Amino acid sequence: MDSSVYMAYDYPLLGAFWTMMWVFLWVLWFVLLFRVITDIFRDDTMSGWAKAGWLVFAVVLPFLGVFVYVLARGKGMGMREREQARARQQALDTYIRETAGGPGRPSEIEELAKLSDIRARGDISDEEFRRAKEKILH
Image (cartoon, rainbow, N blue to C red; front, side, top):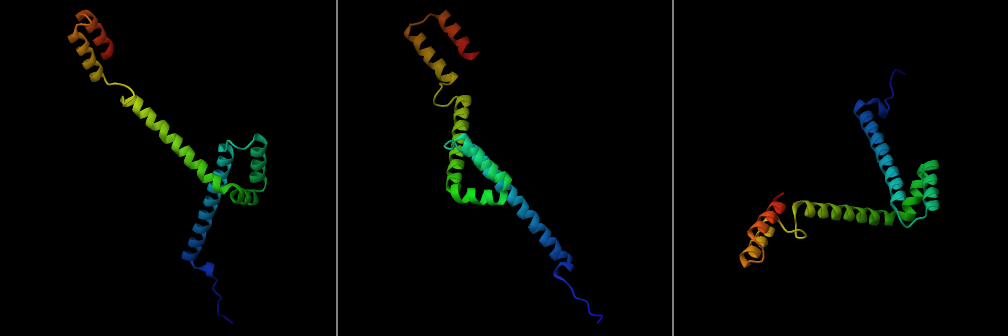
């Protein structure tokens, strides 16, 4: 009976595959766990006690807690994520408009053109025009 029995794990490539699979599943698990914890804190409709209860449930019994949370509140997780992404995009767009001088704020060229028209009509003197121009350019 010199015949050896080879187990599937005796092959190095298969062993590497199983190791990579388990590492991937653990990373996936931690991403899901932190995503649930983030969603618990993000939800403004829950009271503080409800947030504390879900957090304790997710930390003390993580597999069961996350599973139950995803079943009970999973649909709202996507909606809250979209709302936050929309709010971040809107804040970025507002910042870019304010910084770049978008439609909310006239550019220096437009202000100087209006100022020049006012001087051409004779509503302001050359000295007032010069001071206003310096104010716009600085």
